[in-house]
Structures are given as structure tokens and as C-alpha cells.
Image 1 (cartoon, rainbow, N blue to C red):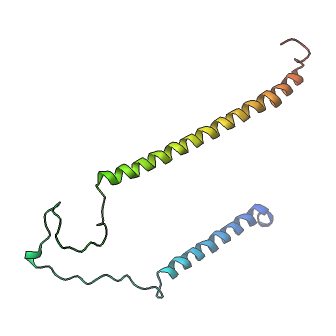
Image 2 (image 1 turned 30 degrees about the vertical axis):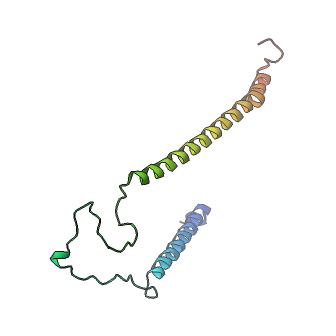
Image 3 (image 1 turned 30 degrees about the horizontal axis):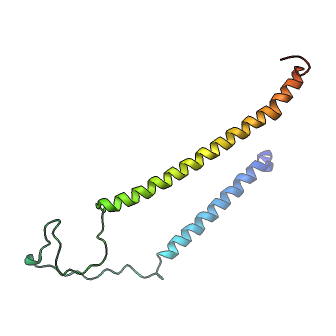
Length: 134
């Protein structure tokens, strides 16, 4: 047991657990403070019961004279909306793919150059092949 307590790995694990515990407490305190008693509660507008004659219109029929308060919640089904968003996504994906391809080729070229200029000459020298015809 004495040997176990003197091992540096034991103390590193204890220190890491203490750091993780402290960070967990800080995160918990931060989240609790954001929704604690000091923050304002979510205020919803009062809802009035709608009479039967003021029922909602059928889907797709615009309501005349209704105040516009922005987009309705839910999935936007407009073709133009999706065409614009997916076009941007495809452009960004293509740019990211080109960047990945350039990085991959640069790494392959660096590895090839290292192999040709460092590794193979060292192997040839160690095998004594440089003096002989290959």
C-alpha cells in the first residue's frame, strides 16, 4: 500500500479527478445560475379562447388582415429556401473537399520526398549498395 501511494501515477490520477470534479462543479454552477432565481421567467402572451366561427382556415389559404409576426415554427417547405441553403452547403462542401485533397497531396509529397532523400540513402549506405551498381 505504501508503494501504491508513492507512485506518481496514483497522484496524477487523483489530481485529474480533482480537476474534472472542479470543472464539473463550475459548469453546474454556471448552468444553475443562468436559470436560477435571478433570471426572468419565460413570459408567454395570454391566450384567449377562439370562438368556433373564428376557426383557422384550411391549409394554404392565407388569412386576410392577419398581423405578420415572422415565420411560423416548423419546417420551411419553400423550394427557393432549400435551393439557396443547399447550394451554399454544396459550395462549402466542395471547398472543404478541395482543401482536404490539397492537404493530402502535400502530406503524400512530403512523405515521398523524405523517403527518397533521407530513408533510402541511409538504407543504401547501411547495406553498402552505394559502391556497387544497383
